[in-house]
Length: 509
Ligand code: NAI
Ligand code: MG
Image (cartoon, rainbow, N blue to C red):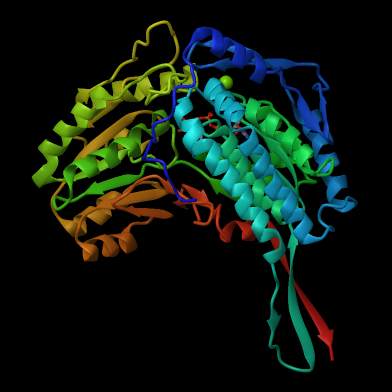
């Protein structure tokens, strides 16, 4: 399934907005969280817990056991034992693939539960968790389930009387640290390829959104994953996260989050020279020429920046517009942005929900102030949005025009619904300006000139290029960054390289 996250199919109203139904459903779905270690839910050794909140209401949803270095150590030991002695890396690859696929089936069976959990924990619209997060998570387990028995080595024609061949073996114990913007989906991107390759895992979900990963762990056991193969330890970055990145018995760490945290993870991983892959932030250019269907490009720009409240690593946050269409485009964009429905994440007609936390809200409003002071023109938004009955972290879709690429709002990742529009005239200069960023995660080009589109696709230094579309994802297509957006490619066949070691075997003939 190829999922265009820019499309939002209409969903039947399931009555989710009716308060009693919602309360009932929330009660059914939200349970206090524990650590999942060696196939069992346990308390933290310290006995500590923390609250996870619903960002739409700012009220606590439930409490979750707070893992720290001691719990991470237990989880790593369980994963180590499962890898060194357990059946998972040794079992028939086809059987392993079936189990990974079955995890996808079970997510699909519990789709509504996962959609609600992530909407409650993260603040994103239920319409999106139903149509994007959950189906893409199902897909990634099905996709990698299919890979498990197709991971093969090679025979190599070497000099002399020898047979030389390679084996592709799992890396070992993998530590995975994920962010809060797509809680279930990020767990899926990390777990599915790692498990399919025969690794064992310790996963640390983000402290803001730990609930869906814990539910997923339960379903993994039900799917037939042996004890110890997956361990989930919720906790905070500087304690649980840092302990995982630094643990000497972890062979590889995969991280998604802020580039500054990525640098910390890299330093910690250096202790035992762990393999690392990093998927960090972006400041992706979305480039619109004057020869396009303006309305389609405006829609693309809207989804590029306002999808998931702008909390997307590949958000099209720098909007480069041909001078010839600049005013008209900004006008249309502002009209659309003002019409975008910011509201209760559980209301199926909501298009933008709440930002994940008070910290994130402060960060966004801080950048908006910087934008105003820098001389950019605030065209719309620029403040919190009022949503009747909810006191959550809602922000109005915000458009700045007259932005210069060297301004802070065009250089730093805001991770919110704030777009910076920049005019351009000359094509050569354009690629240079678009590339003038420490990041290189994604870029988009809107034009009907195929030569221009493909030549820019080559010139832009980014891991994903979208032509006349935005935010397209598929489990089969690689995703990852150039420059400070990180390294390593997730998804597709490329992710198998992140989770396997190559062994060369020589046989004298
Ligand atoms: P973060 O990078 O601190 O958090 C991501 C994950 O890393 C979480 O699980 C966190 O607990 C963990 N972590 C934090 N410090 C750690 C450490 N020293 N060692 C190991 N793990 C650690 O991001 P945060 O603070 O939640 O958000 C700040 C900004 O980062 C956002 O405003 C956004 O710009 C960016 N970000 C980018 C993401 C992406 O997908 N590229 C995702 C989340 C945030
Ligand atoms: Mg939360």
